[in-house]
Each structure stands twice: as structure tokens, then as C-alpha cells.
Length: 125
Image (cartoon, rainbow, N blue to C red; front, side, top):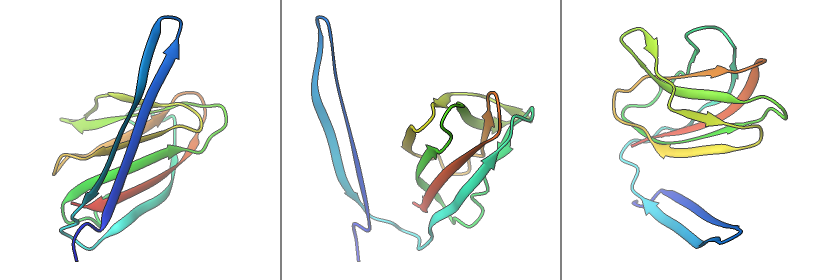
């Protein structure tokens, strides 16, 4: 079977003179491995260095969807390189981030003010 994963994203904006018409990406993607939906619900702490996201069940990192389930606290994320967390993203309360992971990368997250729960759904490439 092919095209086991469907990824859909869209964005549009309108404020004053700024008008960005709807842009949508909808794509069916082959999944080379057989593991998906991991790791699930993850508790993210405010601890320095962040909380490691366990993606060890995956053979080769692929698509990942992360949703901040907290109603009032942000969670930040990024790669963990040479013993340091390098923040490159923020997910505000109720928001999500969807992207493809680079093979071999190590993902960590850190909550800003209080611990949060994040639903993480990752797939083999």
C-alpha cells in the first residue's frame, strides 16, 4: 500500500490592508516504516534543558504533529544538540505544529510557566 499518511495544512490572513488569500497544502505521503501515533500524551516540564520527546519507537523520523493541550501556558520546542536545547518553535495554548523531522534529530520541549500536556503523534518516514 502507498500514500498511508495524509497531511493537510492551510493558512490565510486579513487585517487592514493585509490580505493573504487561503493557501492550502493537502498531500498523500508514503510511509516507508510501519510505526505511527507515538509517543502520544507527553507531560512537559519547565525544567532547564527541557523534556526529551521519546521517538525511539520510530525507525526513521518522519511527520510529527504536536498539540498543546494546556488552556493558558505556552510550550517551546527545538533540537537538542551538543548538550543544549536550541529553541526554534513555540506552541501557544490550544495550537499545533505540523512538520517533518530530520532523520536522527533529538527533539525536546520546555513549558514556559507551568507544566503542560502535549499530544504528540509521530510517524516513521
